[in-house]
Length: 236
Image 1: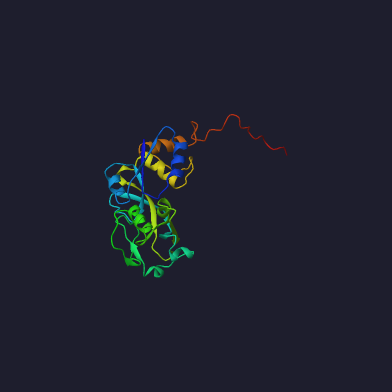
Image 2: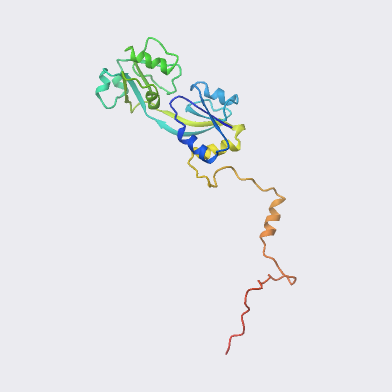
């Protein structure tokens, strides 16, 4: 069994489907985990690998960055932002903006005005936006995950972006983990860059080289295949 963790907003279906085709005898178990808890889960052995949102504490982990997500602002449908195609951070200067405790975007300067509270989760913040008490900036996949009919969202091109990565404990890089890395990186089933090939021991290498040398006859000359015709003397 291979245990794969993923944080909200990440959709691992395409990689899971490839795994099911290539590894039908090894079931894959999906574990949904909050972004703030995924690193602890990996370190405790609760999953073999996981999709995380950077930045994370990389101590003891191997990490492969995969893709960057657009940051969007979530607003009520009757908000002025809903009338435009995209928004700049400066446009939100007079709005109260929620900063949930599970926010994974690295802000140098937080946009807008501080809201009256810091929600515990993004889901809680979305509920407060729907109540008309502030706005929320999140990766686009989270805006889609928490979609509501009374809300909409718009891209914020000059905002910092969230990056999704694959992570796993470095000292637990098993063959199954290597197989999954190959799938995520788009390697074919016959790719030579899948699992790390076994390295021959020093004792095996001379034997291999000896096996590759051409066979010689007793006189020290190379043996001539029996089916090769001898060239006769050319007629004058």
